Length: 565
Image (cartoon, rainbow, N blue to C red):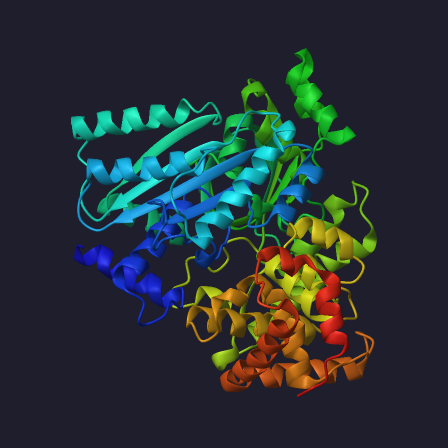
């Protein structure tokens, strides 16, 4: 391994909190998985959730399953996305890493393993992680009635620390093996991506860079100077320029751009079907007059003539329009999109913009408050933290990706915050594996409420951080990983006892401070989770399958009869 790659892998190992004693080959597998899948998926993810390497791995070190642009780990997430969007578009990403150069035999071994994975009569043994991904993939195929835009696509990243030189024999071998997969007639497309040391370095650099995009914004007017706003523009963008803003280099939609939207994509509802119908008929050239358009808020921009480079930007209004346009890119010739660009680093101004633009849609006032004012106060609370219990609240997509020296597991994304709080304080551990948008819709009146103390949200995230740290260091058996959201409320009770206080009361805030105090100490947290694991053992009777984690009655009974140790 060359010196540059070696240093990048070492930095990655530290940021991902991988065990000090983890062997170099396994660290490389995680590194390759991160680099490859970051190229296909623009949001944060847990590398542990993707790793499949080890004995009986079918020559596959990592598998990422994406449905409708969202990485999924569970069948329930697939169901939620299908029901929300009224379709399934799946992408399957497979990774394999080798030290040294490219070998035709080893490449063929990976293709052989893939064919066995998709065979109706598999012959090769597979480890538990491969088997889990296989069940998820087969479940997706069982929902083929939702495949409105074709079968799943496949991407195979084959990485080595050597050099890919387009050797004719290797190229031919890959072509033959790829054709054998295509002949199964179950994929929309199959792509093989050879990744050598140079490419690996580039992929890692891309994954770590701060989010920025450049567009040509010629048709615009400059708006008058406004307090709290550095610059603002109103105009329209050609569809191809707009697609640059909401897509990554691999053509995937950047779903994290829409975290500040009050509503997730609503799928094929009446309004979205009307937008799509406009794009399909002769009136598409009138789209610029018939649509409210898209509003983007950026932290900063750089201008050279009509070329604008946006940094730290979010789509704060226009989630539905953006998604429909993305899904209909083949119909966008001569389509112009109404576009408003606002440059501001003032949180209060951003919140006012989000509220104002979203009032044009059917959104409740309390929903606007929960996803604007409360989010800002939560962000401020996290920023005040320090020391070993410091966490980073990622209110905006990829907010901390370019910041070096931060452990990834200290970054709290909005989806993870929703899952942690719902598990720890709302009794919904069995639903935490759902697609976060569906989970949020089901509890929207119970989370991010104005009079909730921010310490409650921090407490749940801190507990989740301590738990993830235990898993990474192998200080807690990873067989409990499917039950991590059940461990959170049980460990809370072990550490601080039960509570029945109202969440807007001073007593509840004091209770949460007690929880934080317990989980701030690493040894105290480890003891609490050890006790929680004992409770899980007592109710599972040796069955640690992921399906058990969905059993609400099983764990509610355990917690109901549980008293502080």
